[in-house]
Length: 546
Image (cartoon, rainbow, N blue to C red; front, side, top):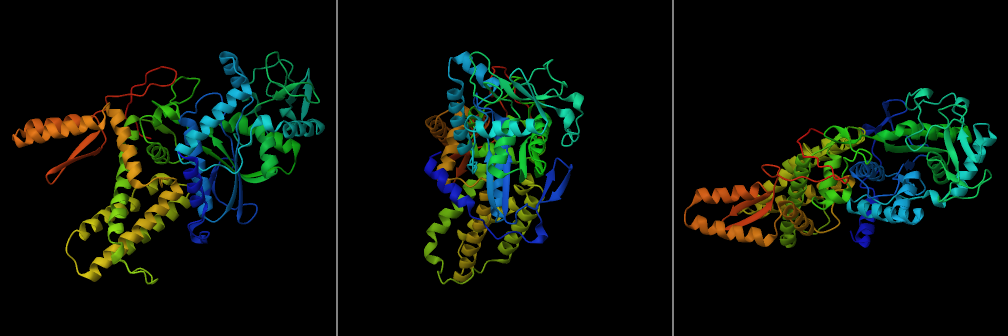
């Protein structure tokens, strides 16, 4: 996406659509710490401070990363919509064992390699219409804050030094496990940290790692080295948000040990450390198995967006509750692509009609008088949006029901405009269209589905992706349309239907409109294509419920 357009889009989204919701629609979120939904109340009225764990940047980001980013982007947008001033921090891990291993394989400097993938990640985020966080700190830029926090932990007897390494003594922290419910003996300190016989307790985890040959290192009071994985987020969240803030988020897999260790570190460094709400998004699965790089069953965001529009992918990701597992399925991606095409085609038709009828709309500054059906439709959409979003961001329930009814009414009103009507009735239809369009676009904006391009542009992009999946170019479709027209003139309707069915199986629908035939993308009748996971293991697409 053009960065200037992204910036414009962010400014638009940052403007609250309405004043803060009334108590009738209290915003409730599920708090992993208490394992229940709670009314959201920020520590400072009118302001929200939020930290979300970002990616370890050593490769292109996958679908699981996309889900986390989109889930918390929806939260970010909704908080802004409610009128809050939000400080959103999402970090990059650019110092890590995996980065070092990859850099050794490629012969690159680890920090340079990570920087490259940080930039690639931000390109993916722009494509998915995720707003830029307020701050995107990197570990390599915050060594002083990290070392200061480790010093505090040691001084308060929660940490100890062994041969240049620094470990956190979990036995010293009696509340260890309060987030996850895990017992100390279950802690393996994450796959990134091997068991070390020098530890006082096998569950102790690294705060600082002594330097090894060929690895990046920084000077410290304990000798040259680099941070452990967990300390970075404690230090950076405290630096940007203080030890007390409202929301800490991340994927479900981070609850233990990462977030559990963060709590221990932060509380050890500052007794008053407190996060009000811990929020976690569900996994993306492939054939009901967690999608991950280690299993080789993952798809990068780029692999998906080469074949599907980023807005279709975003729709797919929010078409399930953020806490639910989401099973990857070509069928569901096709359905998402079809759904967004219908949305944007409807809005384009509405916009085109209103543009043509602009002269008929009075500009007297008076409130628009709309039809009873339109008034009921808008009220229902507005109410449903408020109720569902305020209930722990139930996005999947918003994209059905009143939202689809609003699009259907738009199409019905457009049909009415084609018929002869009295002036007042026609004016009523025009105003009704305008008001419904406004309400629909407000919903899309909060969900991050309002495109930064014209509707015509995004429809052309969706059609181009459909052609890519079909293995065709538009000239192929036009040629087949012309051949089918000749077949129809010869009254060979069986062959005509076969030609239509052949294209429909590839995701191309032909529509006969009067004497003209046009085409649009559709859900293929049968799925005869697959995307190959990044590690080369073919995973045939199977219809699965999300």
